Image 1: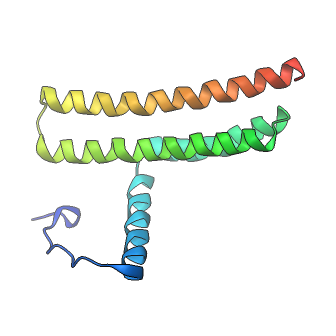
Image 2: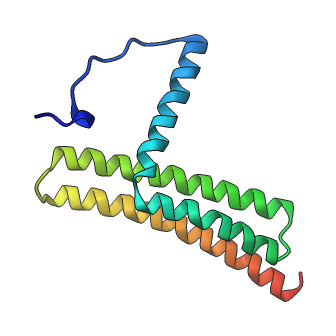
Image 3: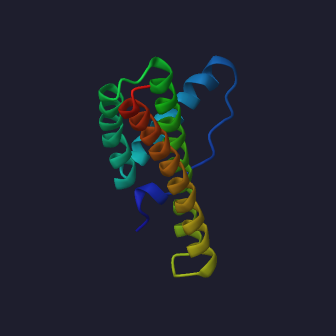
Length: 133
C-alpha cells in the first residue's frame, strides 16, 4: 500500500501570469501546513510572542522589532529548508547512511546558527535596555 503523501501523481501543468502567483501562494501554504507538523517549528512560533514581549519590556524601538521579525522569518525559512533536506534524505536513505547523517547535521547546524543570531540580537536589546541606552 502506498502512503498518500508518497503517492505518485502526474506533474502539474506549468502556469504563467496571475495563475502562477495564486499557485505559488498555494504551494507556500502547503509548505506551511507541512512545516507545522515539525515540533521545532511549533517551538519557534511559540517563541516569537515571548521574544516580542521581551523587546517590549526592554524598551525596544521600531527598528528592533523589524530586525527581530526579519531574523524570525529567516529562522522559519532555514527551518523549512532543513525540513526539506530531511524529507529528501529520508526518501533517499531509509537506512542509516553517512551522507544522510551529514546532510541532516548540516541542516541542523544552519538552524542552530540562526537561533544563535536571534539570541544574540535579543540579548543585545536586553543589555541595551538594562544599561539605559
